[in-house]
Amino acid sequence: MERFIMDGFQIQIPLDELTKRLCLADEEDVELMRKKLAEALAIACPKALYRICKVNGIEDDTVQIEGKEFHSKVLAARLKDVHHVFAYVVTCGTEVDEWSRKEKDYIVNLWLDILKEMILGEARIQFQTALCERYGIPKLSSMGPGSGNLDTWPIAQQRPLFELLENVTEDTGVVLTASYLMHPTKSVSGVLFPSDKEFVTCSLCKRTNCQNRREPYKEHTDI
Image 1 (cartoon, helix red, strand yellow):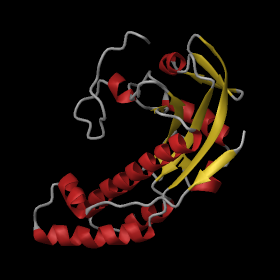
Image 2: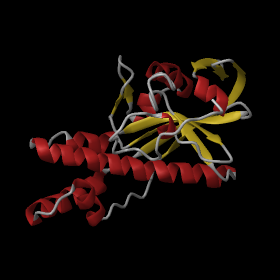
Image 3: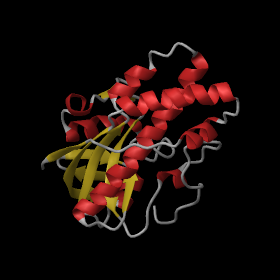
């Protein structure tokens, strides 16, 4: 099926939101991040690539999507009554990533890493909202390889996902490494699918003290 590239995201991150996330109080640090925020937003160009894919079949923990096999008990359960999914990659963009890597100060570099994460988060929200509006879908849930616990959906499944999307690096700049991690690191991938109630893989993850947790861990009886 046809692939779509989405960019032109309008990223707005208030300075007070950023400094709160970074726990900054010193005026000098706040002023520094004011300048860094302005620079980042001036060059940031987040991108999204997605493809509408048909779910060909599900058997046990194996899901067939457009001729690619994905192995996940959780994914199989979530797609049981789903006929099409959106395979996707969203990234903060190579532009802001390359800019941040020029920073020599170790602490400031960590701050910029969180800033890139916030840029990605804003782009991801806008991307998902745009899909809902474009296709008239009230609610979408997401799953990605490597999310949740190690056995939820193994990260090695990034490979067939990227093959399914085709030409990811050419269209977004995102590179999949030999260990199945993405560069820029502030990138996410997976499948989005219609659901009556939003499903967040955080609810399957037992890791504690995760700053990106969106939902507490809980037992699922339907998986």
